[in-house]
Length: 286
Image (cartoon, rainbow, N blue to C red):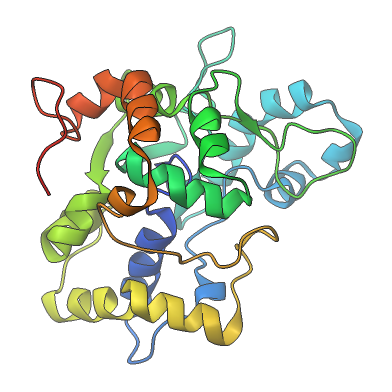
């Protein structure tokens, strides 16, 4: 019997990069996997995945009805013999009966990818086609959700997000969840160690040469070059490009001091917890 490993993150925190490394590692090919073929598993909010499992069109259901079905869908999907590695942007949540959205019987574990919110903000602004102040406001909105609108049918189902801090805490403090936390900055600074530990957590044996090749095929420059050549289907229409920066600390050029203060003021506690602020609440030196 299979099961599901969730690759969870707030948007623009390295999920696509992680999936690129994973897809290239699993492919074990001499050529890189195309960025439009990162088939590690459907995103948890895929309407098509849910429709395929339940056998009818969720367009006929309310958002609340669909949300109540999703844990059952994941449980049924986990009956497959293959292990799935599925991206998810939803915050970790439970229904009124205490049943997790990511059904506990279906779930083998989760990797939560976290990134400095100072770097998330300009990347999210580009991704959504909004200004940075708008992105900062989204990250501070406790009622923020993706695909909330009901005027037209979307390929993606409702994804409750909350604030950036809410989202991080929901996953990293989820009770009884087999969890690995992986910082974007550690993936950059120590890729062999970070990705090696993640592959081990996902139940995969680690082969050094194979891992080095997968990491090499998945550098920012390599993925950006692929996007320039073939386009990337996950790029939203409002974004000029998906792979925009790919480095830590770019916020120092992108944000004003007032914007930095807004982000720190809202997310101080979680930023301190993950080392983005020091014990005194100060920004660490570059």
